[in-house]
Image (cartoon, rainbow, N blue to C red; front, top):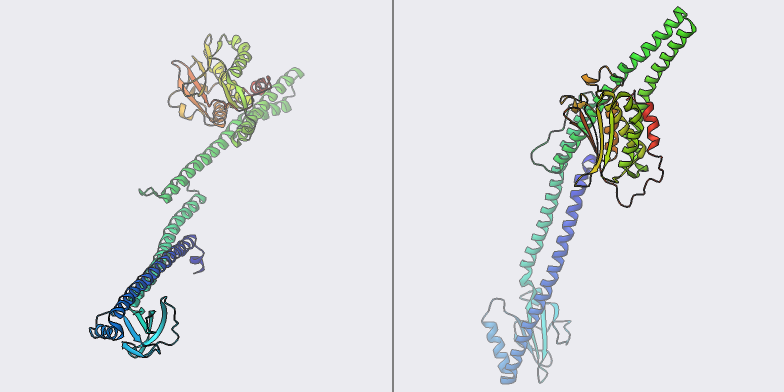
Length: 479
């Protein structure tokens, strides 16, 4: 019982019932007041008309004529007939259907509501008193009990309406509570199943598309995202273990060989350099993972400034030109003018660095890399890095941005499959996206970013973009 009373559905239902009763009471009071005033004024007008009519009879025919007129009216026994009393100056009855002058009746000409003895019992009446010439007195009244049945029906109907409203409200609250508890129980069972490891469990959704179904769809979407994240974490953990095992195994093998063979100093230093390279590979993996974790938290978003994407792209192309010349690859950069975006210049430089580095890494000798920056019709800034290398197969593109994913074309090249993951994370952090398209031949990587708001502060540090090149160059092999 206490659980039922504490239910929010019952609480809201009781609240609505109380509001409904208050509204009904306000309506009933205003209706009752209008009824009372209207009936009272109508009754008073009728009594005054009767009093004036009988006063006219008195003026024409005198006291005897009025007495005969009143007795004739009483003898007709008209349903709903008025209360009539005609007395002399000493209040002695001359005619009428009331035995004696009512006690406590004042001499005011305004209608008075009192109780009198009539037909052997007391009844509430409204009387109009008129003093006629010669000191005669005339009372004209009406029985107030005539409308009591109607008033009782009104009160009974009001009580029934209040009772119906209360029962309907409380019953509705209980039904709503039962429906909500069923939904909550479904949510509890779903959460319990997920806690036990069944990540595929989902809330049932009906076709009614009501608020509860909308909530269920939202929760199911959240569970889909959670399942994707958990499976991604599991895959990342397996990939980390797999990719770190190779350099650590090589490092252990080198050190063990040095310990057993005790080679010459030249060979020892050569093996030490190889061991340092293995350690650098491990550090590179962890640096890339830490960078991804920092991007995923969104903490860098608070430092967004107005950045010219075209300038960042030009600096990245200039930085990679020496490496491209060594491989005989032509690198070019074209832009349609300043393309301001709201972002972190270091992260944008890192993303472009990874795309250009991948194009150099997988590009064909004597190939080309074209970097273009422009603005679409809808105002979106578009950064494109296109090469004519082997590209990524259509089957591998949906998974290319997953962490540690490596397609068939990249099996024999350095790296652990985090480069495109970083680019995708940077694009999403900036409210944009990464698209991987076929360049026929080669790969066309398109980064879409929203244009910068006009009121955003510009990047005042001209070397901010260059700050991303140093870590980019150090972690190219890891990404």
